[in-house]
Image (cartoon, rainbow, N blue to C red; front, side):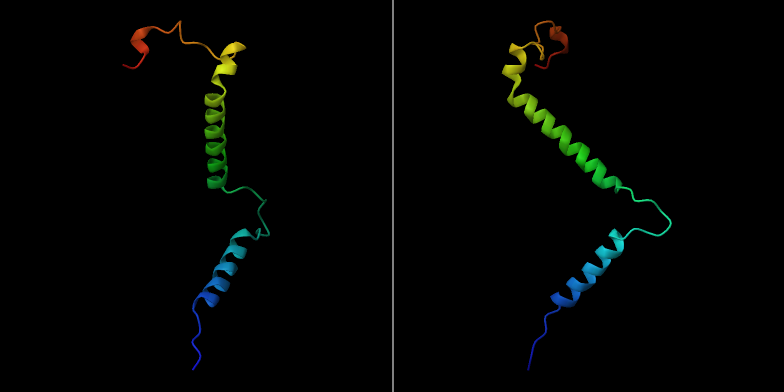
Length: 78
C-alpha cells in the first residue's frame, strides 16, 4: 500500500495560481502591484531612518543634521 502526499498536488495547484497571477493579461499594460510598491517605499524609508540614525554624529559634524539647540523646550518631549 502506497501513501500519497497531498503536498505535491497542492504545490502544483499553487504554482498554477501564481503563474496565472503573474502572467500579464492580453489587454493591460504591465504594472507593479500596489502592495509591492507600498512595501518597497516603507522599507526604503526605514532604511533611510536607520542610516541617518547610525551616522548622526558624522552628519552633525559636517552640518547636515541640526543639533536641536534652537528648538523651543515646549516642543520637546519630557
